[in-house]
Amino acid sequence: MGAGPTLPLETIRAAMVLRANAHLIGASAIRRIWDERLILFLTKNVTPLVPEFGSIGASGDLVPMSYIAAALGGNDNRILVDFDGKTMSAPDALTILNIESLTFVPKEGLAMVNGTSVMAGSAALVTYDFAKLFAATLHVHAIAIQALVGGNQSFHPFVHHVKPHPGQKSQQINLIKRKRGGLPTLTSIMLDLLDGSKLISDNLDANLTQENVDRLIQDRYSIRCLPQFLGPMLETLRDVTRTLEIEMNSANDNPLVDVSTSKVYREYKLGIDTECFKKSARIEQL
Image 1 (cartoon, helix red, strand yellow):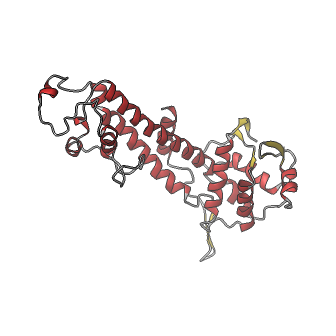
Image 2: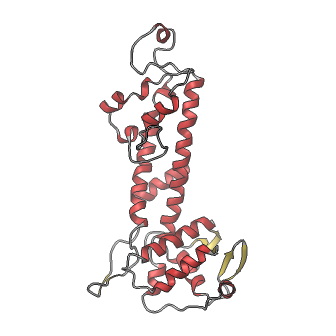
């Protein structure tokens, strides 16, 4: 049994999408009707109400996924759903949808509850929100540089070519579409944001002019070292995204069935890489 407040509806719906996606790989031994019902619930805005506490997230999201599975079956009046903003029992929701209750046959219950869909869905939403906030952060820094009459030389590609930490020059996360197309780097984004500004000291070419001499020789530490202190955050975002994309597109229940040989495979590591979750937890704190 779960306990505590209800999970955010967007987290539950993310888990439903990922559960259906995992089944479509074809190694879960579950009838197609369950995934059709998952999709029906999503399109009709029917969301099972799932308690926040009850799963340790190390060997599958058993408790939260059991609430989703029970709602899909529609056999228990104690299981509640949000139907387009209105709370009702799962059987009542099925009646409105004009579909009959359904019972799991062998293996199908495990295919529905034993997986990583809730933790992966929650982590994906947090990571997506952080990516948007990170993009906004770069815009705020560009404004700060202009307010402090800073320069753009600290973003020159040469600096980060000879000190090539991947976060400083990462091309893996498409945070903002560049004017000239292609995937941006952290430094190229900053150069684009500052391009054409009359408020900065444009000394990208490293040539000393009287104008440059009259200003600070170097920008204040907090703005000239932006690539170095935001770079690790971008590296973390990249690592978490890569792990989540793999997990979100994997079959992750236990056991798995190879339909080409009719063999069943058990006893393997089920949870997502714990380091990924440590990083996503740090992202949420940021």
